[in-house]
Length: 331
Ligand code: ASN
Ligand code: ZN
Image (cartoon, rainbow, N blue to C red; front, top):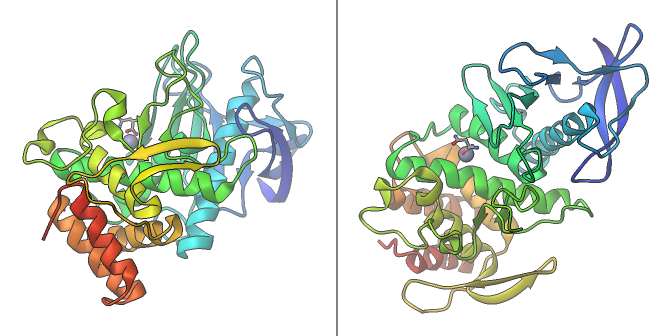
C-alpha cells in the first residue's frame, strides 16, 4: 500500500472528517502512512478474519450504520486524533514511541457492546452495539482503548486492584484530554465517558468524571477497600482527581455541559487547567508510575511530575496536591 493520501469520510459521531489513506491497485485503502501505517480492518461480524477497508474512490462512509465503512471512518478518525494528540502535545511518536502504528478492527462479532485494546494483537477492536446501543466507535472510546496500549508500553499498570483502577483512569483521563483537544464541532470535549453510545438506553454516559458515583457504581474518593471493586469503578477517584485538578470543585459549565464536583472534606479546590493536568498525568505515567503503583504512589508520581514541569513552589504544584487531598489521598 503506497504513498500518502487524504480521504474524506462521513462519520457517525464526528461529521465529515479527513482520514489518512493510501493508494492501492484499483483505488484506496485505509492505511495511514503518515501515522506509522495504522490500518483499519473489517471483521464482518466475526472475531477473526479481517479484511482491510478499500474503496474505488477516497470518499468513505455516509454517516449511517447501514454503510459498513461508517464505523471504520469513526474508528480511524479516533485513532488518528489519538496519534496526533500524543505526538503534538506530549512528543510521543506512536503507542510505543517508535513510530509504528497499531491497527483497528471494526464490526467485531454480533451485537457486541464493547471495545477493547489487546496487547496480543497490538490492536483495537470495536463492536457494533446492539438494539439501540450504537457502535462503540466514538472519539472518547477510541482514545480510551488506544491509551491502554500506551499504558502497556509505559507504566504497565497491572489490571487489577488499585493499579487496575489507575490503568482504567489513565484511559478515561487521556480520552477526555483528546476529546477536548480534537474540538470536533459534533463531539466537543467533556468529562463524560461514552456519552455518544447510549449504552444504558436512557441517554446517560457510561462514566462521569466530575462526580463518578453518578453512574451508581464508581467511587468518588479513595478508601482502603477501593482496590476490591471492578477497575472501571476504582478508576473513579483518579478520574475525579483529573476533573478537580483541571476545573476545580463546585458547579461549572464547560462546552455546554454542567458539572458539580464535590470534595471529600468539603474544602474547595482550585483548578490548574486541563492542559496542565494532562501534562502532569502523562509525565507521571511515563516517568514515575510502575506496574504496582497504587493511589498513594500515583499522588507522589504526579507531584514529582508537577515539580519537574512547574516547580515545587508553584501554585500548580500546590493545587495538584490539593486535588489529591480532595479525593482522600494525602501525604
Ligand atoms: N472497554 C473495556 C475497557 O477498555 C474493555 C475492558 O473491560 N477491558 O476498559
Ligand atoms: Zn479500559
